Length: 139
Image 1 (tube, one colour):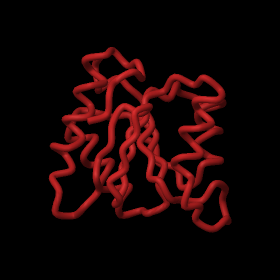
Image 2: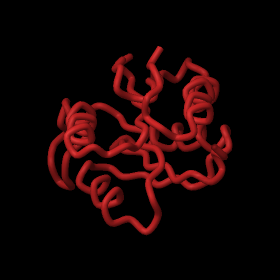
Image 3: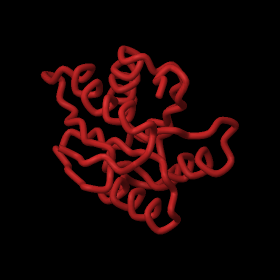
Image 4: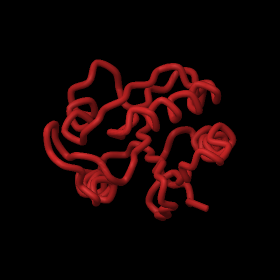
């Protein structure tokens, strides 16, 4: 899979963190990146977006809809809904808390002292190896 051709959506309400994630993805060759600040916009992109969503990078805590307060379970709700609706888009969790889940592509711990580019490179290599399917084991 050519990472320069995929379309990625970042779901995070923290603008500075979103910029850091976008830079890390661009460093790893991804060019088509969109950021949404709530889950309602993410679902609109998945179902009605101009471009197909090939990868989702999600925080775990952000609003479900514009104007709402932060939902501390947003990332879990996203993953659960994707499973229920059988949506096969790989997901990377990028959070300041180190989450792990067996039903995602991988997890990247967000920390200013971390090498975010390298951490994404490791997880994105799984995507390249599996050709875009969502059956990689999270380390």
